[in-house]
Amino acid sequence: MTYDPGMLRRANVAWMTGFAMAFTVVAVSAPAAAEPGSPPCSFALTPPRVVDVSGTPMVTATVDPAGCSVAAEPTSSVACVQLQGSDGVQQCATIEGPGTAQVYYGPYRLGGIYVATGRGCASTGNPPRSSCETTGPLTATL
Image (tube, rainbow, N blue to C red; front, side, top):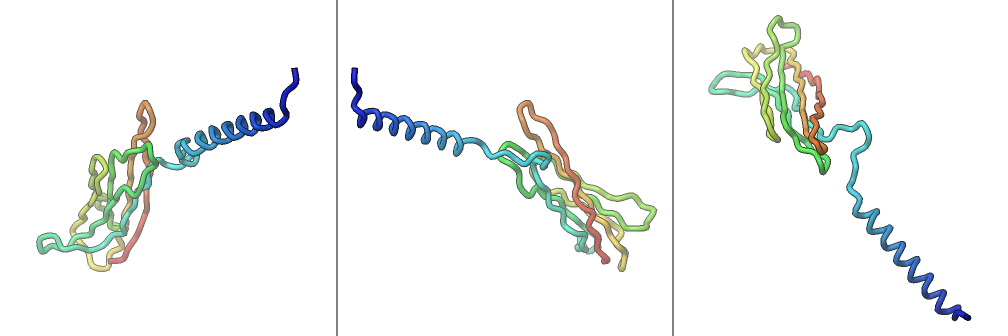
């Protein structure tokens, strides 16, 4: 039995084209994966600043989810402020879910050095697992 060389060439071209298209679809449709060791979500910490709360000056800082990989969801944010060198404990505020945590520290001392730190947690995977990251410290002389 003899085969037409033109027919074999067209069959090979069709097969290669189909293979290349299937490979392209697989490569494009693959989900973007985070770099190994990188947290599933990032969190933004603001530096300490003075705000007026009902006529009382207080120091505040916030922690806000700043972005997550496709398969992650922020579960909590914590913002903390402390007066550097004081015997007082740091004051912290926590919010569950994807919201912004904002802490208010008082009493405010003019010229004090304030330190803000934060922590954010996210859930990722199936079954879900929690992953947390710390942010800061950020300092400001207020």
